[in-house]
Image (cartoon, rainbow, N blue to C red; front, side, top):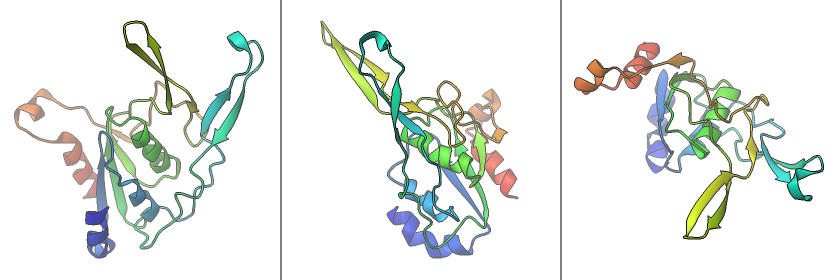
Length: 182
């Protein structure tokens, strides 16, 4: 964010921006605030199950959650430019939360491959022999309420790495993002 904030005057003058969200972000999710024209209006997209009976005998209810208030628009507004976000299957958890904002609020053209489709806090159970089993402890959906698990955030423009591109040391995802910018 320090570098981003330093470059903001130049970014403000640009006609297009490319953000790379392959993998896990490095505490820079606040950039999305500069792409939003209005604050987050999604009521709930995270659901924590309230389980009070053994074997889930009774219908379950959920505590709902969102990041309401965190993603308020911030100056300068950069969403009036052509914006492309690159992503892939290494984008998981927090990265998918950010990508859900990008997709849900149509903040950019998404280029690449689907995100991991796995988001939410996790629970751990330790078996004898110190074997740890983790599982997702909450249900997370996309901002439109549709399923995220096993699907992920889908790109607007799908890109597949090629053997030739790998041999040549090319970044075909970035090349496609630049092509869209032009």
